[in-house]
Amino acid sequence: MKIKNFTLVLLLTCMCYFPFTNEVHAQLDLPAGSQKASVTQKVGLTYITIKYSRPSVKEREVWGKLVPYGMNNLGFGTAKESPWRAGANENTIIKFSDDVTIAGKSLKAGKYGLHMVIHENGDADIIFSKNSSAWGSFFYNPDEDALKITVKSEKTDHTELLTYQFVEVDKTSATAALLWAERMIPFKIEVNVSEIVLSKIRKDLQGQKGFTDVSWNQAANYALNNDGDLKEALKWSDNSISGAFIGKKNYANLQTKANILTKMKKNEGAAKVMDEAIQLGTVLQVHGYGRQLIAKGDKEKAMEVFKKNAKMHPNIWPVNYGLGRGYSALGDYKKAIKSLEKALVLAPQQANKDRVQANIDKLKKGEGIN
Image (cartoon, rainbow, N blue to C red):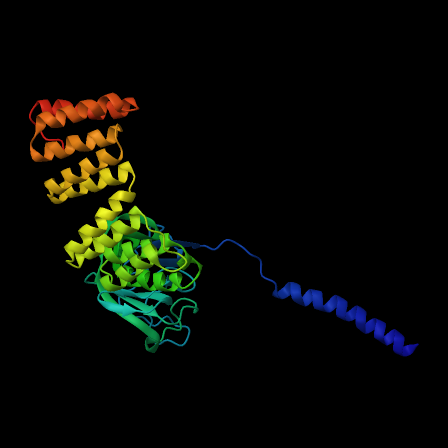
């Protein structure tokens, strides 16, 4: 009985003691003084994300005071000299889903701690640290720098809450910028979009996506228009047209092949392929090809294509519209007007009729319509 009583007392003591201990160490989830935020920009297929905390100015002098110039001893941690954490609280983090180039220097895909050193002359050193999990800059180690660049800061309108934005974006780059108080610190991030996309295409074509003629044609088209290997593009085009299991000859993939051959300066072969494509094209596809030829200055060839379209698809208004454009390109406005008048009668909607009539009016004034 004594042993049982002792066990019971011990059990009751543990039940009382351990919950009390857990309550002492538990932390409430409360709002931070500097709220967390993130911003993401996609360039090509590459994602660039910045995660940070946002302190307010609160009428304080920021540059040179709240954020001291140069490296500083923060009085805590292992670093004798620390940069600014480029935000508040834990590391500001920047993440790249693919390799990038910043200020002409390569940086591998991955996640980095983002730090800055602000100089009195307006320069800012931007540091991309391999350590992205530390709190602030207290444990900064220059040996962990993956990249360090220097940029010029710019004066700007007042920004109360520290903010990261992508202030400029184009097809192959994005300029990220920190804005706070009356200053902006921008840095341009460049992405080799073509190389990344072509590498992904090669992998995708080895999987399920490689079992459709459309995918191979898309791949060939991308390589053609984005400085890809033309020999590789031609193989992809041939797979779309006649490849085992997936080959399906149509206007779209034949036109792609013709365009590749043209870029390879194999004009005779390109013309032969396009002649075949025209036989498989819809009235609008062939019409569009004729307009492309006019844009390139090949007026005679364009007229030939418009006439073939008229023969294959008689009594359809876009055909007569195309003939009108062809005659206009050749300077024969009388025949152009006659063709457009036929198109006007056949046009199915008022918007079509209005567009045709506007071109007839231009021709009557002696103005071309291409």
